[in-house]
Image 1 (cartoon, rainbow, N blue to C red):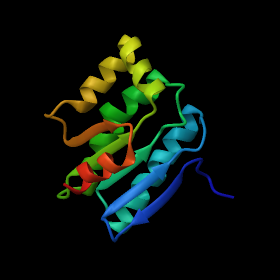
Image 2 (image 1 turned 60 degrees about the horizontal axis):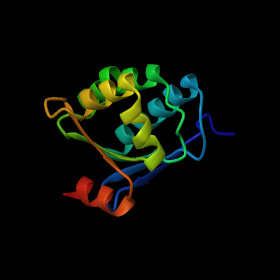
Image 3 (image 1 turned 180 degrees about the horizontal axis):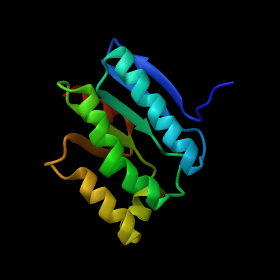
Length: 135
């Protein structure tokens, strides 16, 4: 049995790592999943990630803070000199939560800021997300 809730698929033909969560997960589980994603990305030398969180609409502020302030910067440093690019597939409901929750919006705006050591964008459709990752 896998220790991750998400499925992690390496796509060396595209130079992309894809992680999909089929359901909600606890904070501890999400941290383990993100560490597994980084391990796979390091192993396959992939710094372009498609993160499909469309089925995770219950947002934990702790995870928002941890990913944008700690995990993504650390992952970017580990994958350097390749730039870390994160295309995050979100449901419309999740985007509404970002708008309605000032704490979540703060973490999101921090993560999207151009001065970060990683580049992150949100998408609701996979096609545009892949185009951005590959562009």
